[in-house]
Length: 390
Image 1 (cartoon, rainbow, N blue to C red):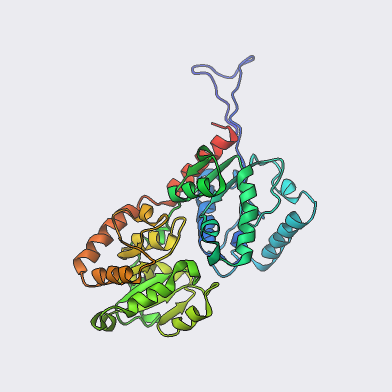
Image 2: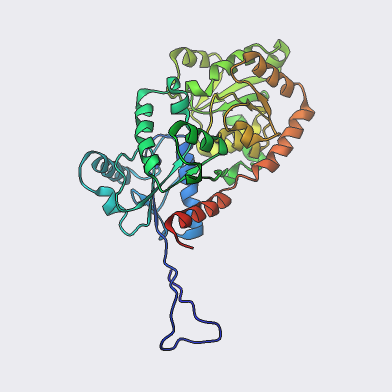
């Protein structure tokens, strides 16, 4: 919206100079919302929604155009079949033909915020991007070849960007080190946690317990089953617990089977493996856990851990990457490469109800730092700075 600034005490008259505040326009690559995705999809869905709540859809556009984001599902597109087809077709044209598709579809924008699926960004817009993590660079052996190719292409885009958002100080520092980026080019803006994770309704928690047959107290892991998540170490650590604890508690693992090793998939059949859990059930399932265990080898932020903190589930997690930054002193931190440390951390929490209550209470307070409205406000300030608009 354009707002004329009238001098104090004066009306509009001939010769008055008006200062026009030009409207900023940002187009965000939303292609991950059309495909199967976990953390990035979660981030984009809530981020775009809250940016639009604060700035309006006239300021925050998407590629492909998505006026309505629909419902969040990590397994399926947030758009209908026809809009999904059109969006993916536009991506293919943009990536694999000489047509300047993204220049056309971002016409009038000041900034194009790109993602890893964009190979040829628009040439006539300022370019920005979010750096989520550097795991493909630091732990390439844990990723399929397609992921590594996408990250190598994305690195060229990142180097050409006018400004970057990193979702943690850890991610920023790793990007500077791995890609040789200038630190001043990167702004750290923490993501938010969906409101539904803060104090879920007790009736919903009871309902989830019943529907998933969770009769005993349980240790919960949520995440895609892939080598980086270190699920085998969690299985080993739980098996090493005293029999009295294993009789009292069960291990519950939830998440889609990504590129897990065949032997890991086979081991999942020996415990309570729930597979993919719909987004609507995750807050109650997380709140129902006696302990949330997440021995990941690397995280750019760690949504499952932050969500567990908000839901009041005491956390045992890794002392590596961004996880100490996110949890502070509100979790039991262990070396995820040590099964004995992980086993000891689980035992410490499971054997002490008072420790669990203390960590849960403090974690809820810390989780308040990760709210989407604050993330959106900081992101809009970032975009204004890059665009050179007050």
